[in-house]
Image 1 (tube, rainbow, N blue to C red):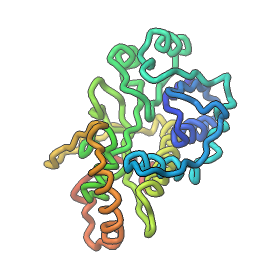
Image 2 (image 1 turned 90 degrees about the vertical axis):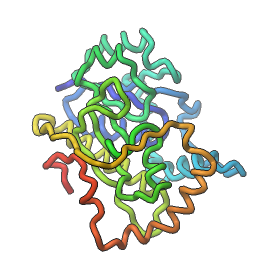
Image 3 (image 1 turned 135 degrees about the vertical axis):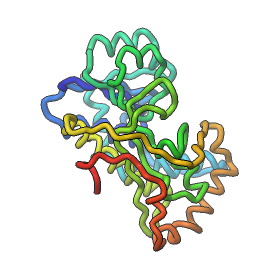
Length: 271
């Protein structure tokens, strides 16, 4: 395997992921498709707050990403491996032709728009998607957000999945739960999870031949599926209130509730 395309977005967490992957793997040719608007000055600055609760939530996330991933924007200077497209153009013929011309061994997706069946069929079992959530328990958009709203800290995490034509239903390669610390916020815990996911993705690619197919999770848990519109103002308020109330209780729990909710883990990535 020597050719990889990464399809991601333009937030600092996405740039961090792409930057770390390409800098950590030798003897691989990369192309990066960035979806969205890149800041004109190739820089990211902290944002002041307003009275809009949902907007403030995203401002908090953006500012926390600066604390964690501030140098990641430097990848934008590496123009010979960047192909920038606008929102909604991921499945256009021009983008697909660009991917076909490069002819990657695998495609890695993280934080991009939904990929339609045409592209999936062209690279069947060769598109690996990062889902920030634990399938099959939580699927769709903002799943870690909703797991925290529901006080299910044990179901916050990420899943690396072979993409199929449905949402977060492909074969799971590897998963990991978020680790929470005292004085965390939803964003500091989330950004640490992204750093761990990035490290694990690098190890997965480096040890691709060691990956084993693991039997799908069997659970009686009623899968929760969310859309973007479900992250309402009321749910956003609930997120911060519940996080503040329940964080320390989760950290100090004696019983291991995680055993009741198994995840898929490659043996060489277990920590």
